[in-house]
Image (tube, rainbow, N blue to C red):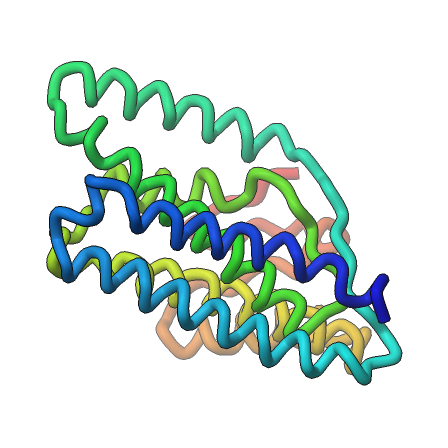
Length: 214
């Protein structure tokens, strides 16, 4: 049982880190902001407790695999440089760093728990970094409404996991479904009066109005 439960320690430690961030002056100056942190941490702790109890009697445990993909950490470094340059000329960006770190912690914990609720293995890398940084380059909620920032992140990871889960289910249950899906998509596009898609490299006929590239 110990081997099955051990990976759960990581999201627990990160959740405690999120609670620790809520004690910083940047968060404590606004009670609603602090409650956003406490509410998010509480929800994650409840989820971890349920998952822990579920895994106690499971025959298959949960595992971590570290995979560092260049497209993730390179994009993250570029975005950090953008934040650094932006903050040099507009001080609130630097003041927002604590809230940005909290979102990263929340994203990692939420993604881990969501993955382990459906699958055995979680791939640990820099994936959440470009997601969180991209969101915050365009949208910040005010401190009084910061809980919406956590909800937006949760909704984003739920949507991503839903797509992954649907794709896995389709490929496992129906190995030949890929071709059928292409045909359904072509039929759907035809209903909107769009040009028919080519069948693929084995059918190098040009698409009217679009052409075809070998």
